Length: 229
Image (cartoon, rainbow, N blue to C red; front, side, top):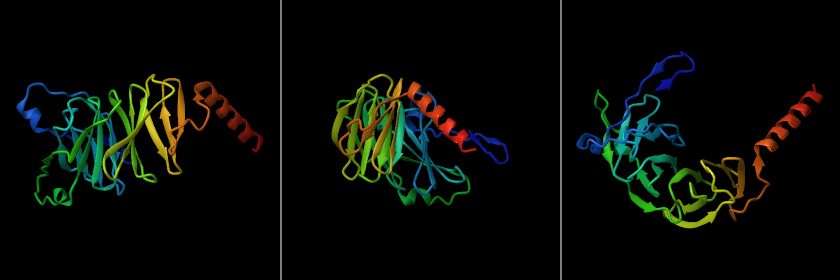
Protein backbone atom coordinates (compact mmCIF):
# COMPACT_ATOMS: atom_id res chain seq x y z
CA UNK A 1 0.00 0.00 0.00
CA UNK A 2 1.08 3.59 -0.69
CA UNK A 3 0.10 6.44 1.63
CA UNK A 4 -0.02 9.96 0.17
CA UNK A 5 1.12 12.35 2.90
CA UNK A 6 -0.48 15.31 1.10
CA UNK A 7 -3.93 13.93 0.31
CA UNK A 8 -3.95 11.31 3.11
CA UNK A 9 -5.19 8.75 0.61
CA UNK A 10 -4.11 5.11 0.46
CA UNK A 11 -3.61 3.19 -2.78
CA UNK A 12 -3.20 -0.56 -2.86
CA UNK A 13 -0.57 -1.66 -5.38
CA UNK A 14 -0.89 -5.32 -6.44
CA UNK A 15 2.08 -7.59 -5.75
CA UNK A 16 3.74 -9.03 -8.84
CA UNK A 17 3.20 -12.72 -9.48
CA UNK A 18 6.08 -14.89 -10.67
CA UNK A 19 5.82 -17.99 -12.85
CA UNK A 20 6.40 -20.31 -9.91
CA UNK A 21 3.33 -18.85 -8.19
CA UNK A 22 1.11 -19.76 -11.11
CA UNK A 23 2.62 -23.23 -11.49
CA UNK A 24 2.84 -24.29 -7.84
CA UNK A 25 0.52 -24.53 -4.86
CA UNK A 26 3.47 -23.94 -2.50
CA UNK A 27 3.32 -20.16 -2.45
CA UNK A 28 5.60 -18.25 -0.09
CA UNK A 29 3.80 -15.07 0.96
CA UNK A 30 5.60 -13.72 4.01
CA UNK A 31 5.34 -9.98 3.53
CA UNK A 32 7.66 -7.23 2.34
CA UNK A 33 11.13 -7.09 3.89
CA UNK A 34 12.79 -4.38 1.80
CA UNK A 35 11.88 -1.32 -0.28
CA UNK A 36 14.69 0.39 -2.21
CA UNK A 37 14.80 3.30 -4.69
CA UNK A 38 17.40 3.53 -7.45
CA UNK A 39 19.68 6.62 -7.42
CA UNK A 40 17.57 8.59 -9.92
CA UNK A 41 14.40 7.66 -8.00
CA UNK A 42 12.76 6.33 -11.15
CA UNK A 43 12.49 2.68 -10.06
CA UNK A 44 11.41 0.97 -6.86
CA UNK A 45 12.59 -2.51 -5.90
CA UNK A 46 10.75 -4.61 -3.35
CA UNK A 47 9.48 -8.13 -2.76
CA UNK A 48 7.13 -9.92 -5.14
CA UNK A 49 4.06 -11.88 -4.03
CA UNK A 50 6.37 -14.85 -3.62
CA UNK A 51 8.88 -13.75 -0.99
CA UNK A 52 11.64 -15.61 -2.85
CA UNK A 53 11.43 -13.14 -5.76
CA UNK A 54 11.94 -9.41 -6.36
CA UNK A 55 9.58 -6.91 -7.99
CA UNK A 56 10.42 -3.68 -9.84
CA UNK A 57 7.99 -0.77 -10.25
CA UNK A 58 8.27 2.46 -12.23
CA UNK A 59 8.09 5.77 -10.36
CA UNK A 60 6.12 7.91 -9.82
CA UNK A 61 3.26 5.90 -11.37
CA UNK A 62 4.12 2.59 -9.65
CA UNK A 63 3.39 0.75 -12.89
CA UNK A 64 4.89 -2.76 -12.83
CA UNK A 65 8.13 -3.25 -14.76
CA UNK A 66 9.31 -6.79 -14.04
CA UNK A 67 9.58 -9.59 -11.53
CA UNK A 68 12.94 -11.25 -10.95
CA UNK A 69 12.64 -14.93 -10.16
CA UNK A 70 14.35 -18.29 -9.65
CA UNK A 71 17.47 -16.84 -8.01
CA UNK A 72 16.58 -17.59 -4.39
CA UNK A 73 15.18 -20.57 -2.53
CA UNK A 74 14.21 -18.69 0.63
CA UNK A 75 12.96 -15.26 1.66
CA UNK A 76 14.65 -12.21 0.17
CA UNK A 77 15.61 -10.10 3.18
CA UNK A 78 17.23 -7.07 1.56
CA UNK A 79 18.29 -5.39 -1.68
CA UNK A 80 20.55 -2.53 -2.74
CA UNK A 81 20.96 -0.64 -6.00
CA UNK A 82 24.45 -0.22 -7.49
CA UNK A 83 23.21 2.34 -10.02
CA UNK A 84 20.03 2.93 -12.01
CA UNK A 85 20.18 -0.50 -13.69
CA UNK A 86 21.94 -2.99 -11.41
CA UNK A 87 20.42 -4.40 -8.24
CA UNK A 88 21.75 -6.90 -5.69
CA UNK A 89 19.47 -9.05 -3.52
CA UNK A 90 20.31 -11.16 -0.46
CA UNK A 91 18.33 -14.06 0.96
CA UNK A 92 17.98 -16.45 3.86
CA UNK A 93 19.30 -19.16 1.52
CA UNK A 94 22.78 -17.49 1.94
CA UNK A 95 22.84 -16.53 -1.75
CA UNK A 96 23.26 -13.10 -3.33
CA UNK A 97 21.90 -12.32 -6.79
CA UNK A 98 22.81 -9.63 -9.31
CA UNK A 99 19.98 -8.27 -11.47
CA UNK A 100 19.90 -5.83 -14.39
CA UNK A 101 16.87 -3.73 -15.27
CA UNK A 102 17.60 -2.90 -18.91
CA UNK A 103 16.09 0.14 -20.68
CA UNK A 104 14.02 -2.07 -23.02
CA UNK A 105 12.03 -3.29 -20.00
CA UNK A 106 10.84 0.29 -19.53
CA UNK A 107 9.68 0.82 -23.13
CA UNK A 108 6.23 -0.69 -22.74
CA UNK A 109 3.64 1.29 -24.73
CA UNK A 110 0.60 -0.77 -23.80
CA UNK A 111 -2.37 1.04 -22.31
CA UNK A 112 -2.84 -1.63 -19.65
CA UNK A 113 0.42 -2.01 -17.69
CA UNK A 114 2.08 -5.41 -18.00
CA UNK A 115 5.39 -6.67 -16.69
CA UNK A 116 8.26 -8.90 -17.72
CA UNK A 117 9.84 -11.93 -16.06
CA UNK A 118 13.62 -11.76 -15.75
CA UNK A 119 16.42 -13.96 -14.43
CA UNK A 120 19.46 -12.90 -12.43
CA UNK A 121 22.72 -12.22 -14.21
CA UNK A 122 24.58 -14.10 -11.48
CA UNK A 123 23.75 -15.98 -8.28
CA UNK A 124 26.54 -16.70 -5.81
CA UNK A 125 26.77 -18.13 -2.33
CA UNK A 126 27.92 -15.73 0.35
CA UNK A 127 30.66 -17.78 2.00
CA UNK A 128 30.79 -18.05 5.81
CA UNK A 129 27.25 -16.71 6.07
CA UNK A 130 24.04 -18.05 7.52
CA UNK A 131 21.08 -16.12 6.14
CA UNK A 132 21.98 -12.82 4.49
CA UNK A 133 20.05 -10.24 6.51
CA UNK A 134 21.06 -6.79 5.23
CA UNK A 135 22.89 -5.20 2.29
CA UNK A 136 24.34 -1.79 1.51
CA UNK A 137 26.33 -0.35 -1.38
CA UNK A 138 29.47 1.58 -0.51
CA UNK A 139 29.86 3.87 -3.52
CA UNK A 140 33.16 5.38 -2.37
CA UNK A 141 34.83 1.96 -2.23
CA UNK A 142 32.73 0.32 -4.98
CA UNK A 143 31.82 -2.57 -2.73
CA UNK A 144 28.70 -4.26 -1.41
CA UNK A 145 28.59 -5.05 2.29
CA UNK A 146 26.40 -7.92 3.45
CA UNK A 147 25.39 -8.72 7.02
CA UNK A 148 24.56 -12.29 8.02
CA UNK A 149 22.72 -13.57 11.06
CA UNK A 150 25.68 -15.66 12.26
CA UNK A 151 27.55 -12.46 13.12
CA UNK A 152 29.69 -11.80 10.03
CA UNK A 153 30.07 -8.84 7.69
CA UNK A 154 30.99 -9.78 4.13
CA UNK A 155 32.53 -7.49 1.51
CA UNK A 156 31.93 -7.99 -2.21
CA UNK A 157 33.50 -6.16 -5.14
CA UNK A 158 30.64 -4.38 -6.91
CA UNK A 159 32.46 -4.35 -10.26
CA UNK A 160 33.18 -8.10 -10.45
CA UNK A 161 30.47 -9.38 -8.08
CA UNK A 162 33.06 -11.47 -6.24
CA UNK A 163 33.37 -11.89 -2.49
CA UNK A 164 36.55 -10.30 -1.16
CA UNK A 165 36.52 -11.09 2.56
CA UNK A 166 34.45 -11.84 5.65
CA UNK A 167 34.99 -10.57 9.16
CA UNK A 168 33.53 -11.91 12.41
CA UNK A 169 31.72 -9.26 14.43
CA UNK A 170 32.01 -8.85 18.21
CA UNK A 171 28.35 -9.79 18.55
CA UNK A 172 26.26 -12.43 16.80
CA UNK A 173 22.98 -11.52 18.50
CA UNK A 174 20.38 -10.18 16.08
CA UNK A 175 22.56 -8.27 13.64
CA UNK A 176 19.67 -6.99 11.59
CA UNK A 177 20.49 -3.63 9.96
CA UNK A 178 23.40 -2.10 8.09
CA UNK A 179 24.18 1.40 6.80
CA UNK A 180 27.16 3.17 5.28
CA UNK A 181 28.38 6.75 5.56
CA UNK A 182 29.87 8.56 2.56
CA UNK A 183 33.17 9.10 4.38
CA UNK A 184 33.70 5.37 4.83
CA UNK A 185 32.02 4.08 7.96
CA UNK A 186 29.71 1.10 8.40
CA UNK A 187 27.05 1.11 11.11
CA UNK A 188 25.59 -2.21 12.24
CA UNK A 189 22.53 -2.48 14.43
CA UNK A 190 22.69 -5.37 16.91
CA UNK A 191 20.41 -6.47 19.74
CA UNK A 192 21.95 -4.28 22.44
CA UNK A 193 24.14 -1.71 20.69
CA UNK A 194 25.36 -0.20 17.42
CA UNK A 195 28.76 -1.11 15.94
CA UNK A 196 30.76 1.41 13.91
CA UNK A 197 33.35 -0.14 11.57
CA UNK A 198 36.10 1.47 9.53
CA UNK A 199 35.47 0.48 5.89
CA UNK A 200 39.21 0.12 5.22
CA UNK A 201 39.92 -2.43 7.95
CA UNK A 202 36.49 -3.56 9.21
CA UNK A 203 37.81 -2.93 12.69
CA UNK A 204 35.60 -1.41 15.35
CA UNK A 205 36.73 2.20 15.17
CA UNK A 206 34.63 3.55 18.01
CA UNK A 207 33.26 2.28 21.32
CA UNK A 208 30.05 0.32 21.08
CA UNK A 209 27.05 2.60 21.46
CA UNK A 210 24.69 0.96 23.93
CA UNK A 211 21.16 2.09 24.64
CA UNK A 212 22.28 3.54 27.99
CA UNK A 213 25.14 5.46 26.36
CA UNK A 214 22.80 6.76 23.68
CA UNK A 215 20.33 7.94 26.30
CA UNK A 216 23.10 9.79 28.15
CA UNK A 217 24.27 11.42 24.93
CA UNK A 218 20.75 12.56 24.10
CA UNK A 219 20.24 13.92 27.63
CA UNK A 220 23.56 15.74 27.41
CA UNK A 221 22.67 17.21 24.03
CA UNK A 222 19.28 18.32 25.35
CA UNK A 223 21.00 20.02 28.30
CA UNK A 224 23.39 21.85 26.02
CA UNK A 225 20.51 23.02 23.88
CA UNK A 226 18.65 24.38 26.89
CA UNK A 227 21.72 26.27 28.10
CA UNK A 228 21.82 28.26 24.86
CA UNK A 229 18.14 29.19 24.90
